Image 1 (cartoon, rainbow, N blue to C red):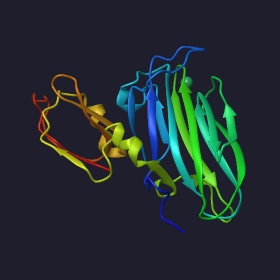
Image 2: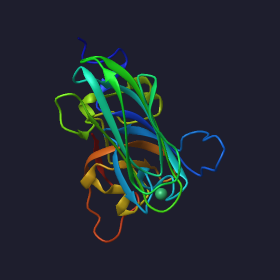
Image 3: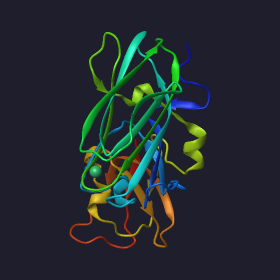
Amino acid sequence: MSNAPQGFQAGGLNAYYFKDLSPNQSWGNAAVQTLDRQINFDWGYGGAASGAVGNDNFGASWKGKIKAIATGWTNFFTTVDDGVHLKVGGQSVINQWYDQAATEHQGGIWMQADQFYDIEMAYYEHGGSASMKLAWQAPGSTKQIVSANDLFYDIGAANAAGVKLPNSTITSAPVKPLALSSFDARFGFVTSVQDANSNSLAVGVAKTIDFDFGSAAPSPMPLLITFV
Ligand SMILES: [Ca+2]
């Protein structure tokens, strides 16, 4: 039993966020690429990816592998506002692609303990409130949000996107003053950091952010971010 498939690492899924979606149009290129440790989001009336994709008409896809923790019929649960399509092991497990208030849907497949399965999930938000959660229940286990330990991301894809990998840091980067909400570290929010010319320095999930600028952010703003 290997700890991870070749080229993959435990800790979450490659995440791609899209903005300005229109009905019946392809999504085009992702506005934000990052790494999500869990799919457990309630954005309220706000938007994903620290607001980088707007409050409405955005979408996301998550890709990687999931490791079965037991042998048997395994149920997956999505709680979604608005639409979701989940594939595991190449099978369509949940497909509820329409506008809806937060609703739980269920679907399952047979899984073999310690085997890795491709997992791919797409999500879109049309308007109003937005949320997306992915849970599962394996034989002998309680229903729970899928943990980062059971999710594996493509290292090469993360590197190519400039995603900050676990325990990497950026220090004293000259960045534009950003709204505090973009740096809300309480929940490990996705953080996007730009330099003074709006070039992307980093995207990732912030674990610790160490700065203090009182009521007004200086420019450039000193900071230390350690990524999960
Ligand atoms: Ca909605």
